[in-house]
Length: 438
Picture 1 (cartoon, rainbow, N blue to C red):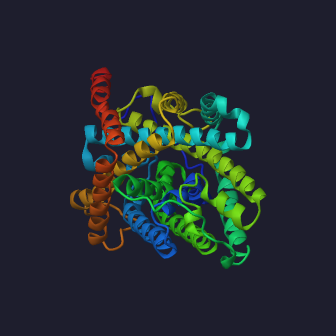
Picture 2: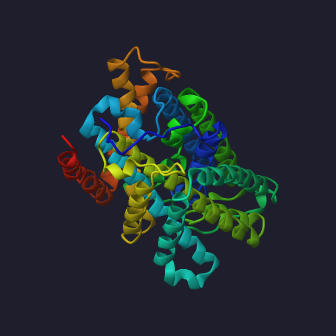
Picture 3: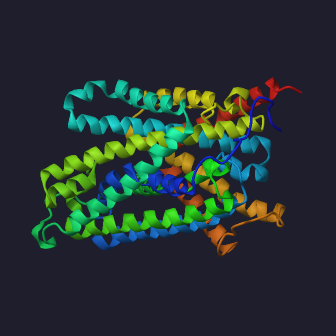
């Protein structure tokens, strides 16, 4: 069912190059700059450190190969909800869309908070204004989306190229720095252990690789059709994995990982040790620019979830109305409003773990959706089919379920908050159903 005032995006305005820009620019960012320090605190052995990133990358690639089947058969924008709405029915579909939207808004808040944390490292006096600055950052990028999607797309394509080149540049700077033997590990505490430590490692790596399905939020607007979008998603993931592995390999080779353990910006610390103290400032500036471009992408994506829900009568009608610039304006404003509330509610670790629970939920329901639609719609047009199905699909589903269970046991408080926010979907859904014309 569609609401009368809502509409699908009328034409494909975005280039095929935008797909790669979304995957590469949406995945590479805060994670790879910050999380190697979190991982090194638990896994200080270089071989294990690099192997952990490699195995995680291969698992993410397998997940992308499975989910690409859904992307290929869904010529519509809207992300996870649009991909699996046919598999689950109205209320479960609404919950999926609700959680997906919450995950994006939580990520908007998280990255706005971290932008201001990094800004205070450059300008310490800004420390007393962190929350107002984070609100300002979120507000500026919300305002950009009120203008047009063309502007946001142009920013994203330029930013993705700059981000990839920055990662390559940092990797080369590490490789061609002084000899590996010049560095001696400093005296540091023993490697962290226990559920909490490993929970943070898992959350950090998931967060660092998250973004591989971003193109699905724009499938109905990208030239070339959904089959081309699916194949581009896999290419983008492969590029990201290679960039990550070269970078973490250079880190493990050039710097004793114990020296990076717990470092809030591990890459900056590494370059400062082996290149120059000024190099850390360059990383900090790049980190801020990455986070700002992520705000742009997140504000492009989140409203499209609400727009897709509104088209099917599962969100307020105004959320489905598209402006002349190609964006659902009211949905942008709703996303902005909730992001401000989350910015004021917690810091980095709280928002990180909250985001991860949402991500895990979505990974599970989307991969399960592949299995459900294979059973219910075996003859549906599938421009791309999951490699190794059903075994690859079952393997991904079981692995994501186990990771989710582990995170819930290790981070009970964040799991409770996530569960409460999901539970709120029921009264919201009932209110929407009651207000809908009969």
